[in-house]
Length: 239
Image 1 (spheres, rainbow, N blue to C red):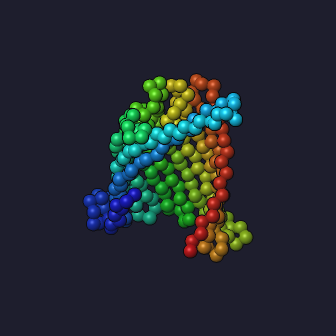
Image 2: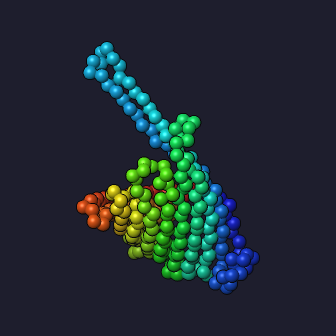
Image 3: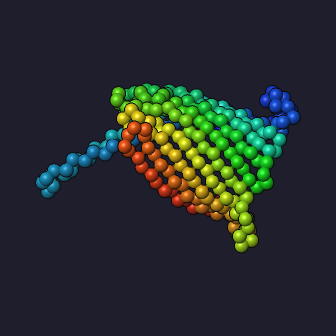
């Protein structure tokens, strides 16, 4: 986030509060401008296309909003780091042309995370966040139900074996969250499990990453479910 300030622990109130446990602290403040649009194309085609040309009408609905956020992280020696952040949503407007059709608020978000760094070459992490998606209900239809929900995940990135002279990083994680839009009035839950690995190539100037994610969605008391696989491949080049 913009406005990040990194200071020695003994020089700030946060650092004095943590005492000898904290070596580095970070405090961040941010301002966010949020925008987007939906475009609807409507086409009318006549049976006699030789005499009548088709009619095409495009309607654009845009969204404009703002939010402010703040966060802090504290390192506990070299073994762990904890962090917390809060986003306060401002007004979000739905506009059609120059007219404002509806107003709501950008969802608030409260998040916490922690990571253990005490194992060489490895990181164990957990995070959770609460999103108040219902703040945006005023932008939808009267019968649309929006659900607030938690988004929690855990993960590990550990130093693996050496293969062909290269060290592998092994990764695994899990995620549980409630989606903002459900089936009728019933909330939809999503659960994901992921596995992956990465290694350095080109004498350490590039990193190769491969991952697979299995996701499942369902709703309590409703015979509706879906599942999916996501495969990803990435290459990062460091000049």
